[in-house]
Length: 393
Picture 1 (cartoon, one colour):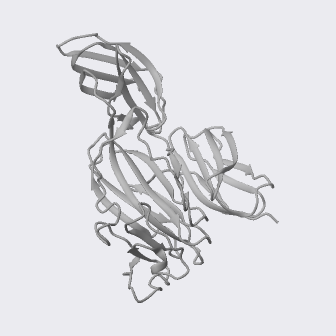
Picture 2: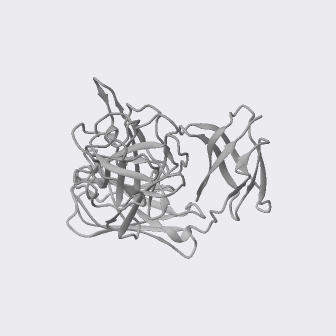
Picture 3: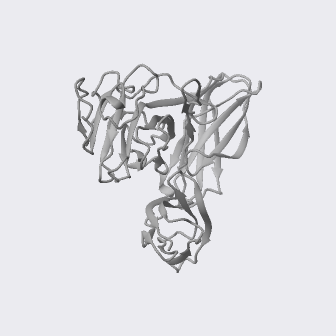
């Protein structure tokens, strides 16, 4: 799944910023679901596998050991080599972290009650407090990663925002975790602030009362979509949009509305071109005669997902510019990416394999410099990410 990464530059005189967004046509419902989102309550409301160190006025070395964190107003208060700065708002607390020397240790974790079949927006602000070896943060909900790892900047005057939308499906709880995939002891120090999780909803209601929207796979492996309105006023048309990643939707059909009605109206459409071997997401766009439109909650068809996610790459330390890729069953078309630690795609290759061939040799361009990279493979129903080191002689 893709996410929108919006960057904030916090300079001495001027701030340039752009806030995270819900999907097009939706807005954030103004209720913060994260307890102690801005750390104003101190070390409260979340759990961590790191060791908490209290900011002591007479010391400046509380975070000298790795795998420690503190809630304070200035990173320099807890480590003399950390940058002196405020939190994102300028007058509150922030979470300062000295990165662990092992990966995937939970830095911050909170469990939140959610509603089924609702789109939520997760976001947080990240800042390096030391320029060396910036953190590589991975965000997840219920064990599923929110896109590729986010690499903090080496610029210690820069706040960056990570944001991603998440669809709850049948879930009633969201277990949100933040981990670091950088295990280097030197540097790897950062701050977090304004960790947010909010519901997305329609921007403005239309005079159309939708009481049902459902998607069901039928016996022919097509998807039958049904929806019902209790009343309509100046209803123009309905559009059904489909996605395989819950973010990028395409219109597949437009159905004429009733116009104005005070009685129950039933509609249906059969998607005969439903994509196989994939979880499918559908939403209904309702448009009135004045050109206004609003989206329904997203519904899913999970039974169509039959593919295997188990791509494998060998070796993960690449010294001869070659990778051997093991392709899982039912995967024939996918895109192979190499992404640097700044999140830039440095190599991309579309690959098609015969269904009977499970091994694929991939040649890495010699122009790619020796460094740490992320291998990302995206197919119609899976996204695989693996950390790798490329060494060119």
